[in-house]
Length: 234
Image (cartoon, rainbow, N blue to C red; front, side, top):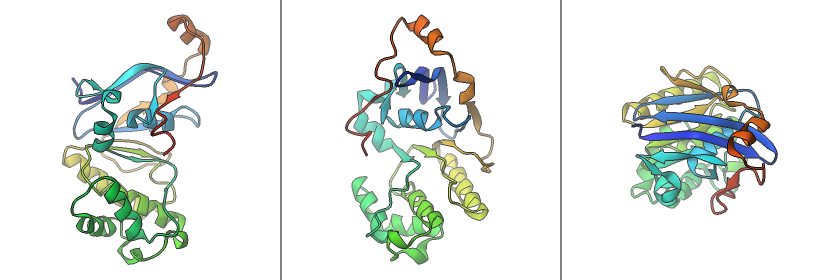
């Protein structure tokens, strides 16, 4: 049995069926690359995996336990990077990372921040306010957050946006190092990120007509994806 898995997942947005009958499985050291056309549901699937959204049907589990049975434990085991960099413009790079470390309850924050700054090659920007960062520098600062605090799972939504080729290669190495320690990485990308032997999950394969899904489930398309109100707004 896989450590992290989802079975027969359905994602609805209003009256639009984003995907249905989707399943996945991942074990320590695995990487899953999400592919699909725009609107195929890559971002929605990552948010489902993060526990920020609840599927219309199906279930996601960690060690056989539904992730929504203990949201706090699930959020503590993962690092999620969405489209938005979420950098506070008035805080320096270091202070942004320090705030993140505090939220995650990291003990030796300064040491972990120094490690993350050097890993993403932004140590020279440590005292620079977020408002003065370029898009690439903001993205690298956001990526530095995933290195702060323990995690078993990385969920990365288009992590290479704003990065040049050199920075993308550095990210690929960080992913390799995390996998070597037993971490699971699930990511979406439109470019060729040099991740070794990822499992490809093509969401275009799970696009099914709404009428077919309704027939199988004998249910109306009601309120779409049901969100966790405490987390979806964050």
